[in-house]
Image 1 (tube, helix red, strand yellow):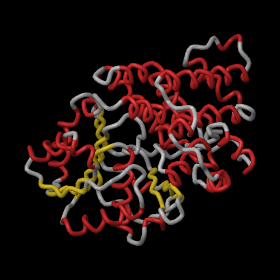
Image 2 (cartoon, one colour):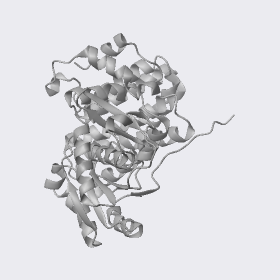
Image 3 (cartoon, helix red, strand yellow):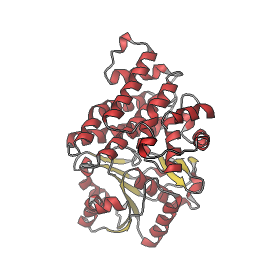
Image 4 (cartoon, one colour):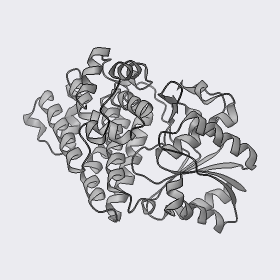
Length: 384
């Protein structure tokens, strides 16, 4: 019997080299007059944000600039942004950046139309009204936040990354132009690329996976294994950048509709408590968590193994799973992802707190099995 599914995706998506210029046509057709721009100071300083603002200038659309977003944006930043939006008389939000500006913009959009505090929306589909209009211009090949119904905001009081899964947060337009991603630092390219791989792998392994999402995710896996090393090695390799854009688009659509798992549950805690880069956390934890998942659903790894080059006819499901995990570890090493927290200067961690909060994370139910607190601590111990 066929099971009914709902597939979430932004209504309009621009993708590929040069597509940024098409954004102006959308803005004009929608009749927007003033944009509230959500970004960060690095993108302003490097001139990347200005490339997007030039499109607005070219169609005589004014804007107010909010460039206070920081990595792992907090509820305080969201509410400061809302205050500025309310003063700006803008009729659309324009986010420019990777996951942090995108998540912040989506959070601002939700509380603009629904009211209350952003903490009220932690969990699944808590809002009543659609977000204030958001146009999302992505500048990194990783998070896919511009495509998804997910956003993540840090509650600084609890030191917890709140995961919001909300169909009302879908943006009106996503823009993925690889020309905005050239010359990004190697470390950022590697971390965001491994974040995308985590999205793809988890969306296959989760019980929420089905034929459409699995097909999308496998396409992402194939592209990431082929093109991420090239993008890291040469920041100006436009073909590699464009193929990584395709990969994150596929991975984003996959996990947006299938869900994620315990890699993200654990990674969110490292980000919330210690402000660690999300992609690095995912990359460190991915092979560790999947090795545990493989004890429960080894068959889930067979198609992944075939996609990345294994001759699966001669392999058992368990051997396919181990092949995939070893190739993930090899790819992480090739793009210089740290293996341990101590390598990046984090030597004192509260394992009890990390484990307890991981089990409460909104992504945890998407895992093939629910670890115990003790099992979670043991997984964290492997990256100390």
